[in-house]
Length: 432
Image (tube, rainbow, N blue to C red; front, side, top):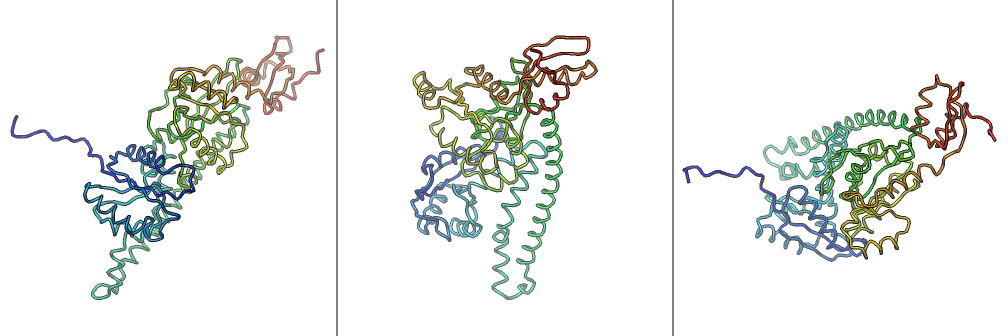
């Protein structure tokens, strides 16, 4: 070997300790919640080297965990040469600062919210997605600025040379003002993008297109399903939060009707409130849908809890009243007995595999059935100089029969209510 040995340039994963507190009130056992936290940490490029749990009735105000447990975590971090300690619940700014004092400055202390925000920051691709993530990050940062300048504030408190200038408080106020200004700017930019999205959404509403939204827990397979249904090539990977930005594609049903299908950001339990708030314009695609397909990973042991977490967020954003069909994906990973049991326990659900195509034809039939549930049957005569209406009838309606006459196209159609109102001036009396 030569004098110079090659050095790897691959990034070295941070060594992480994850911490969970069992307070007995959550639907998720602490072990399962920590398993998900470990996967989140791995998604963000960390290597989990240890996990710590504690049973408490409520969080300790000063350090979230007990003082003895905090010292135990500090010793563990030193012995394992850990780079970061990640708490499964959101820490207050003072708790985070106090824990950093116990564990030491060499090892970072973050919570689940900060971890999810970091993952979102890495995965956001569009301008709107990046702005939404930055807004949430700044909202998270603002109350934590004091701890970042705590060393200067402490110097001021001691008095002596240099303390009269109050450099800690001065810098703190400057940073607070900068962050508040940035939050205001981001909100204005997102409002402008939201207005543009609203115009596009209204155009789809006015056109009478039936709109389907895919929602579900992160990594349930929504993007893979979108690709299977529409023949798209949307990014789809076996990882958490692979998709942040909504993607809408058109789908032609067998009956000839055109619908739109929108893939949305994946949900997760304990999804930070500030992220839900920042992503409201994106989640508006869900609230504007005519039908929600709630995609569930059928092979996940926590499928029922994940579906409940998604329903909770749908309630938060005002979408709980929209028609919803449960779609159990990844059924190719179940054996015949498990599929039979799932079909029996969820008779109204659709069982599919987006990766193999199993059950997708039945799902398309269900979508077509839901799309025509509120249809109005009518016979219309459309003059040939209304070509755009004739085109819309073939795209938006189910044509029962049609004939071409000298005065125009005479068609009996099953039309969505929004299309029916546009066709009403051309409706013929019953031909008997």
